[in-house]
Length: 312
Ligand SMILES: *[C@@H]1O[C@H](CO)[C@@H](O)[C@H](O)[C@H]1NC(C)=O
Image (cartoon, rainbow, N blue to C red):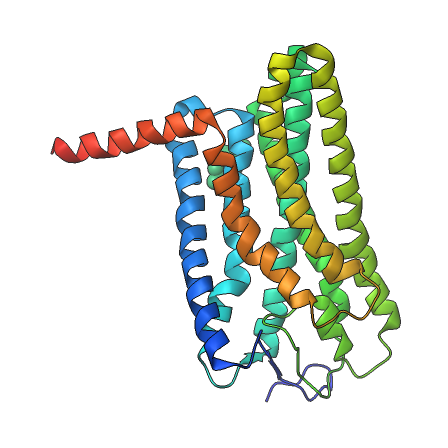
């Protein structure tokens, strides 16, 4: 038994979402289907971007990176959850639990920065069109992506250091389908009030701050578009409403997971499903189905694949 700083708990129990067998079968089908969709949809966006030189603009480079992060974020929890639905004891080792929390926050932090980068890209394109090519150059894109990952790691580490050394002496029931800071901290056998504040301040206020910042930015961009012409408005509105939908969907669960002060702790796991299963699938759907460039590029890619198959 490996002991971590005198604690006796070496594994946690994940209660999962439901105890009823019928519900478990339904969830198994639902999550399996969605996860396959997440893999295919996001891979498709990344491949389309990489192989189609027409899409090598900042907006699509950022979108492809968002797809990569979405796929990663979803993979931190969903495969395990699907597997756990049919295993009798849903036990996760202390280390795997820590690793899971760490990667959830690396990916989540990176996603947050990429969403800001995408808003900044649209802001420059729409409000400062003359400077767009000089501001959003490939170097800037690279910089934003590198910054996203660095900030993701800092965000995760800055919470992780407080949790890794906590004493756990039981109970060890996490009560959700995955490990995350707010729930795991509650299991420590010491007064965790200040730690809960650290997590709320870090994950909660940062995500809420980003949320309001993004919404205000998009409103500002929309107002700017409106001052120009009605024709531009409808086209920009389609792009922007896609971005706004993603932002609202992504951040609403964050609010319930990290900020909501009232004891709705049995509900938060259902909100978490949105971030791990719904938004990663919706991103490809929203961005591709409503975007003409992307549709044209996909047709081109499919044609290339088909014609390369015909000519051996
Ligand atoms: C993410 O962004 C980088 C830097 O701009 C780019 O080179 C890379 O192709 C993007 N990643 C994906 C998966 O498209």
